[in-house]
Image (cartoon, rainbow, N blue to C red):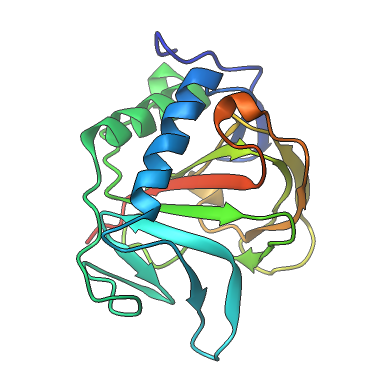
Length: 218
């Protein structure tokens, strides 16, 4: 366990998929909220992603390191303003490594984990995320997901189909969820946000922030 992080009782949702409640203390959540607000202002501002078919995602997204657009990564935000994305900071690499150790244990911990992109999603009370796979990366390293603000219903499925079987998990502010190994390419989504559950002490009086750290392999 990191000296500044205090994980709750971990739960294995599926092989390679681990939920650690209350992993981030309130002070660290507040620091992350402030950092996310700065990133949301630019150089590439937060936006609703437009899908190839013309649909618009209900979540708002800003990226670090590499810019994600459906369904590829680039160094510049060609679908927004053409600017290079903000750099991925070293302290987020360390946070990702600490997350793997606390999720998987010292013996199966970070294994040289070096995330180089973050997708930061903001959900208002009505935003949703359909079932999808994170498969634009060339690396099979785990995805580290951090939740701040309103709780949500997180649906974690299987690697073959968007439908059942799946497991519904409530993710609260400060929770860590890691999925790798056999579950790295499992379908997952957010069918519901629970408005009014955020702790204002985190700096989030409404809505949900989800920060996912990934290795692109690029």
